[in-house]
View 1: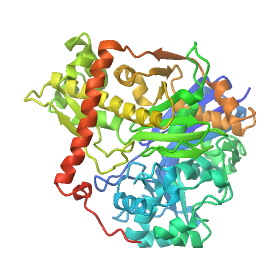
View 2: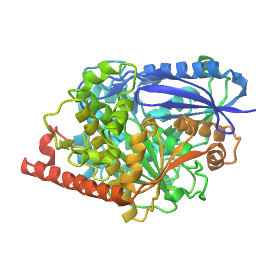
View 3: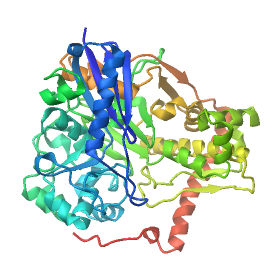
View 4: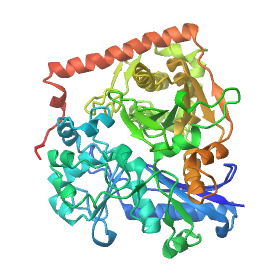
Length: 551
């Protein structure tokens, strides 16, 4: 019998899971990853630390499963879309302004390159048509531009730039094949134009001051690409020994973590409907949230990333929306409240979200109405979609002098609802352009929060499907390994064969729907009002300390 390992490198940890051909989880483990924050806008990691966490997670997974290493046929990696900078022989090259030598990874959530992203947007290049018309500072090209401008010595030392999923595959196999997913979604590669480097636009790189990458034939950022689920190579003997596996075990091309979540959930059964991938929106809700829709033809949606061709499944286009802070925002709202210390002291062994969910139920038989006078704008880390304005900030309206646990519970609920309204905003923009979503398939840490699920169903008017599978992101990566091992005809077949059942949450409609309609109208008005405030104070950029942005 064959088994497959999925490895998921998230923001704070590396996790691994072992699955069988039916998608059943037989063992899993996690190891933490350190993040360095030299300033509020900067977030950095170490590739050495990341790989060490991967090794620990895989070895502990194999131990807990009791499965023989020789029975593992394939392994798949997913990771955050973070930038790894490698020098001679793959040695780390610092990305830190303070020169920390081991910090060679700019984390996905790092916003140091806002000014660079704005300058790139001003080029109006054709590649921007595939990112909703606006370049995000969370993508890799603005970060490269920042690195060249702010850390020229690091730029000179760098021999290769990697997206983290591709770096993991390279570290495991030595292969230089890159993922169509990573390169198309985060690097402006136009995957529909070819897999041998044809998708790079030299004129674009010249326009933004990175012509040296083009002059070197784009070798530093990749000239060989493959779709998800393709065998990139086999584990090298040394890596196999480190992981406790067998040399030459099949390794798939990688995926961005959100896309692994989509792969592990989109075919989940809901028992009573024919599967139509084109009506489902994968909502991968963790530290941030990604919203991924699949279509049979390219859909150009302002403020929504894509359309991206074959970044998940052959012959499907993808559009991606998102929220830069979701779980991170809820944690922040709880931590900054005056009652946070009381919450921790009173319930030291319990998750704050569980306590607040119970408190809300005690405050009202129908909790959603508790926020009639409390409204939150959730853009604390900017708006990724559909406004595509990273300079935006958050807000809460309806505050009182109450600083107790009840007020914290209401603020927490209003934030949950604001995240749901953000998802509704993305859905409405997609629908306006013909992407007819009617079902949300939710995974990630927030899929374990019943309040998040209920508010999303009621606020969006969509059915919410939650997989029974406890680790759908890991399952998505394991599906990659299964396809790379050749045990399925295609990745699509692996996805459908290894997916399992789910539970369904229906929107309740009527009075509750009308209540959310009113609050959603407030949500949209608050967005307009914030833009008006910025205009009064001198424009959107006035709140951001701009630096020189010329090529």
